[in-house]
Length: 339
Image 1 (cartoon, one colour):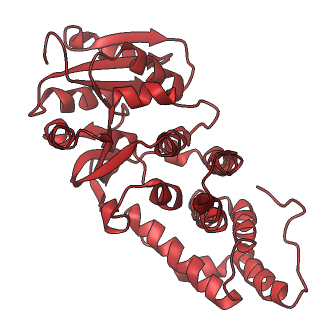
Image 2 (tube, rainbow, N blue to C red):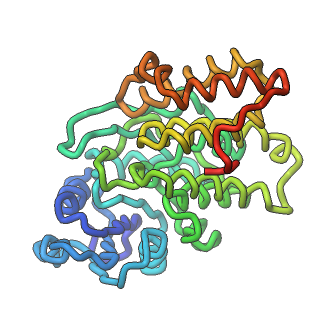
């Protein structure tokens, strides 16, 4: 770690991650690139996180704050950062060895870039491989349209120019679990350019306490974030025209996510809402939903059991709703229209 004028600041927001935070820090200390500083923001942890960090006294800048959430922790880190480049590392994730060197090199050869993104490796709580994710296969170009439609966002796999983060005002705490995507969309609207580093740079840990397991909160936050985006008065016409396709794809993902978390009723409500933005026939819609569910499952290292899905009473009612809707005999599955 450089003693002065670091080029890169790594910000680790930390809340009750005593089990993982040391591995996160160690993965930075073994990086091939060394001109960096590490800022750990302890966001009011109630476990032994503070004790776990004592051995790193001379290797990190440690800050404790009362619990305010990950957005506030990251924003505080941005305020403290000295590096011109900023990388975020969630305390339960860990970098692969040449992450910093490879992303810094992209910035050095592309001075107009504000974001360098990369692929990631999904691992379980023990670090065992679940799936390698190479988002550029489906999203070859990172522009506002692709961010909006596909949302291939993972802060731990990204590196930013600090000036852009400051100009944008950091993360918005009004969208918990979706604050990272909301920031990227704001940056893209501001003209921040992004490019892929086409390699895996980080291990993204999946465990019951991670953000992706937050259930209804995660789903509602994502939908609220999309509502907020399309409520903007400064959207170019080309983005306004995308609204239906974006809402459809977002709600199908939300439906899959809620199904995976065991919220079958809310899954139905999300897919009903998705159906209102879809021009496909009922059978085409059913095929698209099953194929989308299968793809999303594969991306998490799992396999969708389509036969099991179709045995769910809620799914069968949903299929009937699609068929009835075409003949104007709509059956209401739920008294509420939103989940």
